[in-house]
Image 1 (cartoon, rainbow, N blue to C red):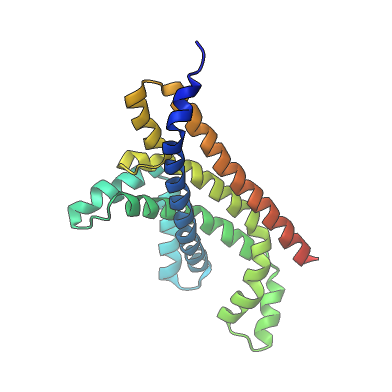
Image 2 (cartoon, one colour):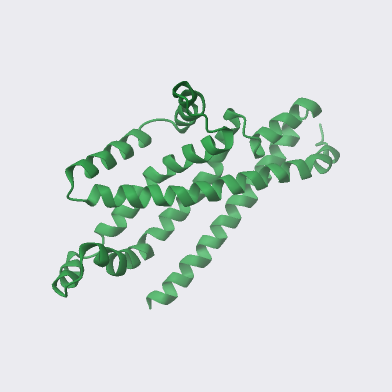
Length: 219
């Protein structure tokens, strides 16, 4: 049986609208995921017992439970305590918390890869620990952690398909709704897969260009 290209052509603009929302959710989730990740990484490296253990617990909890369960807890569970964030905010928060835990380990790995002597030399010059981290350690660590952070972003784009389970009408749910009216699951899922590939390939291309620019500044 041949593909019904006419159906794909007719409904493709609707899928593109879903893809745009997917991209928006991904960008917001990446932004907050970087904040969560950096905060958790610094807390885990802290000498403060409470902050360190909170970060360890957060990273352990997120990395050892499925993203789908985390989304359900936020969207379906939080309203039980009077916290109703709505589907889009719940989706962004769930994705950000999830990718943040993985970013935390990536960022922490980049920080500890910087020789300890550099921090000691900075402190001997009178720089505070916070200033040393901001001006000496983090700029160097960024060159190490950019590639794995880019991989996390690409995974994040694909993980946005799970927010369809909490009624966010992004690319996946748009495809599912169109299947309900066209009865053409193969065509709709194929078109959705094509758009996901476009999004992830574009993100990968941008990250490669950014890595090359970072390499030039390193020399």
